[in-house]
Length: 384
Image (cartoon, rainbow, N blue to C red; front, top):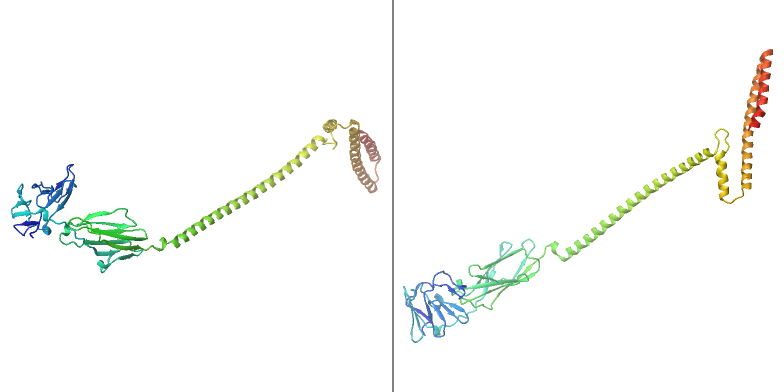
């Protein structure tokens, strides 16, 4: 059976033109050149040259290259034709290509995806194709994985997508030019790196690459360290609270001592003021010459007795009795003082007489002075 795509030459490479949707969005293409030709086959699919076939109903497309038998590098513009049996003809500077669309079988090969290189913390791991588990220590938090789909018929047409389960929420899609993954500074936990690839026809292969990734925590990221840190934090908080309470209590004690000292000083000053006030009150109610109560004291006593409802006679009598007692005590003190002075004068006179006989004039003067003294004493007592 002849191949679905035949050409008059077996040399050259395929050419992939631009394919656009009606709205102008690009479906796929490698060059920004116009479509060389449009040709519809028996099933209603449109051929954009000999290398791209588009289904206008589902708007899907298929590409063909050297792996499918299309080895021509370029074709003439509008050099195409359709035979009665459904074969398509495309002219090329390298020859004539015959396409039999009914014989084209979809490429259903399911390639394996393998790791071609694995490095942890910048250090390559040996036997990358057999690695299915990677452990990352705390000091090396970077992981780099290179991969490839084993459809080697057209590796440049393979596509890839990957996801780090436990970290990525969606697939990350890339093409054959970006066949590496790098993760760094991931939180400590267990992950699974999943990589999926396509064959040259763009069909995803169910044969995935799975690598278990375990990121070990540092000592400060472990549960016991967090518990210890939390306990230390609580202890520091409680210690700070108790220290603050002690400082406040010590300050309160100092303030209390200060208040007590000031209160004692004020009480002492109040006592002194009260004593001074009593002295002033006593001085205001007593005559400074005689030491007896004056008229103000009498008025205050009479007023207080009247206010208290006491009888004026009993109050006055008691007042007279107190006054007599004070008068007697003061008279006795004055009498004793005058007698002592008189006795001292008499003793001194007697001593003088015994020393020398007195003259008549001196005798007369002493007699007069003695008579004056004796006469003045009763006068004073009567006055008092």
